[in-house]
Image (tube, rainbow, N blue to C red; front, side):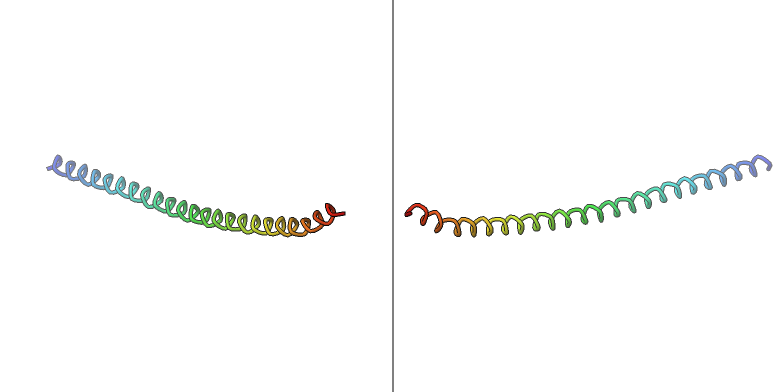
Length: 85
């Protein structure tokens, strides 16, 4: 009888340990999933910032081209006048 009680206690302890182990694994998985979600959000934010920076750079280059074109157009008539004189 005493042996049966001890066996029952050991089984209960093993079940409690299994449950505790499962809880630890579940919490680890939840924590990891949370970290992955945060990392994905940051990656998306960086991707959007990169796209915005590329668009900004393109607009700056287009403005620079317009400025250069305007300078060329302005300087050509002066160059022609200087050649004639």
